[in-house]
Length: 105
Image 1 (cartoon, rainbow, N blue to C red):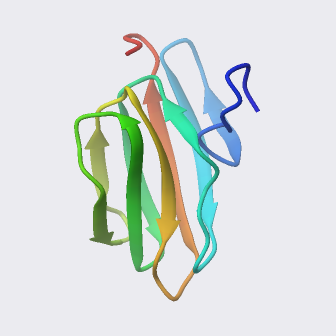
Image 2 (image 1 turned 45 degrees about the vertical axis):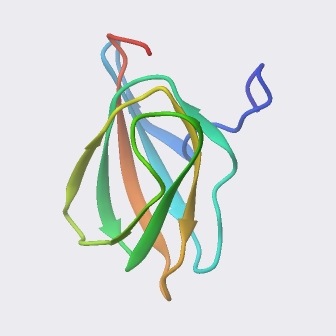
């Protein structure tokens, strides 16, 4: 948990430098990630899964969004949102989140 009581945006950091931080995110079928905040613009790179919901709770510039996971797809999203990710599919979801650290929101 961070100082504001929110969870980290992924399960573990797989790479980090002064400009980007890359997280691995896994959500089992029927599962939901802990509430977390994206303080930076980021990319989601889908690795496996079938259906996922980005569920904004506060802030952000996009509505609740359910989509078909396409392994290899890259989705750019704006930071400034507190959300959860919900796996509404039948298989495990796994993806990478690439945060761009140079311009916090």
